[in-house]
Image (cartoon, rainbow, N blue to C red):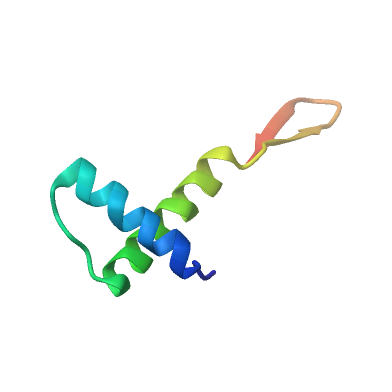
Length: 59
């Protein structure tokens, strides 16, 4: 996964506004990718598998 320069700059501004810390481009890229991966994990749809004995959800 990669972030564009525009996305990195926007993330840097949001980070500075929220935490008062300026990030380098590399730091912002790393943290931005971590945030995107976290959101993807949280929003990942669940798949329901049914068999005759029980129903199971798999992420």
